[in-house]
Amino acid sequence: MRAKVEEILDQVRPALQADGGNVELVDVSEDGIVSVRLTGACGSCPMSTMTLKMGIERTLMANLPEVKEVVQVR
Image (cartoon, rainbow, N blue to C red; front, side):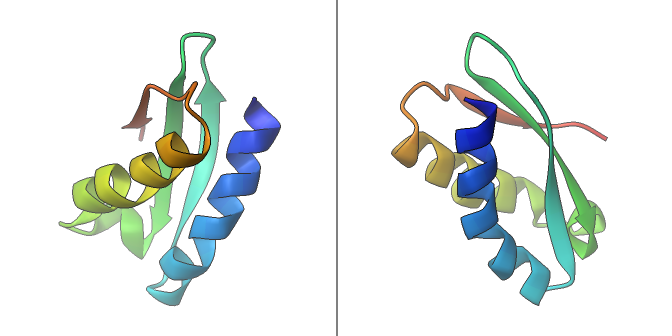
């Protein structure tokens, strides 16, 4: 499942990179929790929670039903 998550993150990255940020996959747990680290401008952006939940999490869950949640680690 990790490879599938990376493929989908690759689809999200251009939008993040356009704003000077990026997303790094940290872990995919067996119970469907995806841990990511927002880097660059996204790491310190006040809207990073919205980016995480409304952008990254929504995209992953729409494409991979086994993903239950996306959490940010620092």
